[in-house]
Image (cartoon, rainbow, N blue to C red; front, side, top):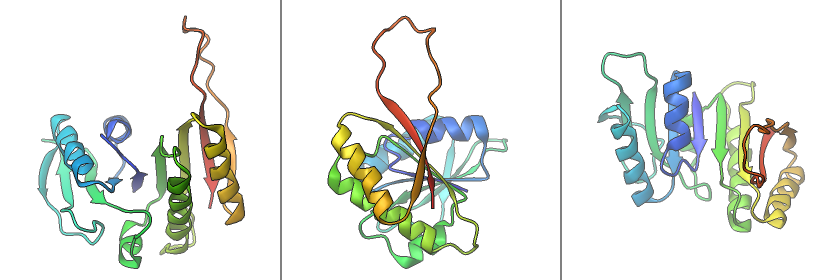
Length: 184
């Protein structure tokens, strides 16, 4: 099971579902309009929806998707607020892999994300910790360093994953993108 925190419009998750076909993929975000757009994008990319009863979502309806005649993953869209996640939600999630992309942009969000990662680690049904990867475009180095310091403060280890060399692109200016592997 893969849990994506802050799925937004779903680009990353849709690509992972189509290319990697995990058994279960949980898209999550906290804003109802974002979740509605996310559901539409997933449907537009070939998934059919059917009702799903799960305790994962807080207020919106969770959905299960599967593509016609395929071995596509079970797909769930969940409303998940990092600051007010419940114990039941955490117990329902149980991801093997947690990913997030472009979610480190505001100091308040970084502390909520750190807290969410702590809780996901603490509420494991097994002793095996999930693999966690956070991809970020570093727009504000202070906010990014605040996130790293927050991880250190709560005992979550981290390491940079070396960047892929893309010297074959003609564009000189490359955004400062980093991927962290967290050790929860």
